[in-house]
Image 1 (cartoon, rainbow, N blue to C red):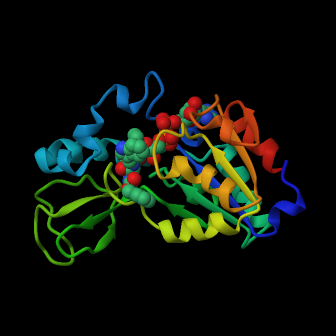
Image 2 (cartoon, helix red, strand yellow; image 1 turned 30 degrees about the vertical axis):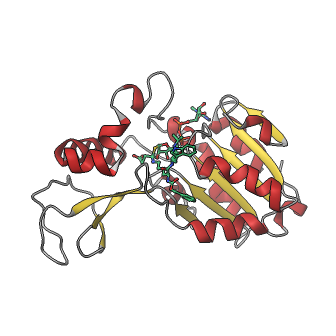
Length: 236
Ligand code: BJW
């Protein structure tokens, strides 16, 4: 449970694919997860995009259409975090590895998408960024510089620098509570946040996940179960 001491300095909540699983979106590394169906080197690296942009566009177009399906909604875990922010505005900072927008749809405002956003694209030629809900193809022209073949999903692939790292480490350095929700702890730098917090702060560190993550022993506290059950109980 969160207590009033946790507010001093702020609360950083790291979320991963597990928080959106019960909304109907797939995780990556579970037995029937995304990486069991596609080769990550093909669809989630800059080299894969250069080799076969059509395949990468198809992968993200399918996921974008899936996210925009009317059946996909924020779940009780997203809603609980939004309520927490309403109760303690300015204290709650969600750093999500997810490219979905379910935190925003739940009402959270202080959200940083460190691995990008599915409903945005950017141009590698002029670096402009755009909201984009349609399918994307190599033939689409950049709305700003009008060049074709330079538009790409606004996501962070392996080998690329995640977004907002300075802001994230600044928040981690000041926080009084670090909560990690629904992430397997396999992908850096996010997987290293708990060690960073332990090394540089006296913050409480809490893992909420379906099962122990790769870095589970690094957390001082943990509760295991579906996010829709454990998150509302933790933040109430
Ligand atoms: C539930 C649940 C329920 C299920 N309720 N829970 C060697 C050592 C160290 C690092 C490296 C290394 N070699 C290369 C690296 C760096 C590399 C990396 O980490 N590789 C590892 C695989 C080893 N990282 C990078 O390249 C990153 N960039 C980088 O490091 O830049 C340099 C840098 C240096 C210094 C400082 C800063 C930066 C970029 C990583 C980009 C990741 N991109 C992806 C895909 C793009 C977006 C997309 O298509 O969606 O992001 S990969 C994929 O994994 C996606 C996710 O955001 C990310 C994390 O996955 P997540 O969220 O943890 O999902 P799962 O499926 O793994 O886990 C789900 C969890 O939920 C499980 O635990 C379940 O149990 C649980 N769960 N149902 C609660 N109902």
